[in-house]
Length: 213
Image 1 (cartoon, rainbow, N blue to C red):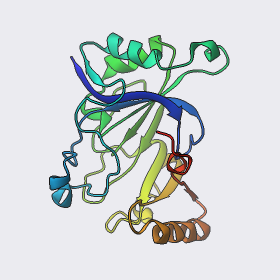
Image 2 (image 1 turned 90 degrees about the vertical axis):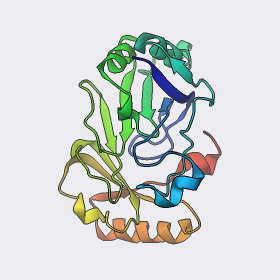
Image 3 (image 1 turned 60 degrees about the vertical axis):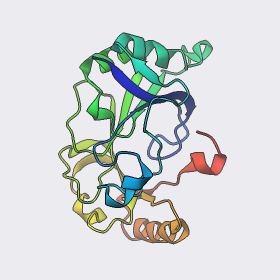
Image 4 (image 1 turned 180 degrees about the vertical axis):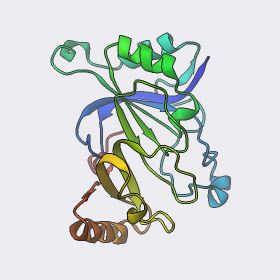
């Protein structure tokens, strides 16, 4: 199988339960809830996405003909001098990574020494062996992946209220204000909700605050 990748880069995880952790981001191209084209945004199942996942023209992006070749590209981004002090960590994201990610990719990344995380919309089941599963449900999209490590809900979403997910099998429940023109209002709403419902933790997009990828 070949893999279409938008970009691969080294940064700090900017949001969620692993915020601040050094990570290689492996962004797969494509999504099942939006084409990535602005002319299709209004009619998309997820019309608030703030990520460019269309094409393979980002830094480190391209077409990879094997899982081993892809894992080598990921490993090349990790600062090798520090490998003995911290286990390398890769975040497989998109778009929707589970359109392409398979057991071969997970195995190849493990062989390269990485702890493997995914960020998914939860509409597809993952392959075996992933170390950290973060699910971000989208209103109007069927949620089939109902367990994992982290549920990260963009808030507010009419039709995807936090109470719909609070009894699912996750270790961390994260509420993240929706970006866009209403970000300040959404942040106040998310803050108030977390104070009233302490099961939920507030997540801010610190990579945008720090101006890093």
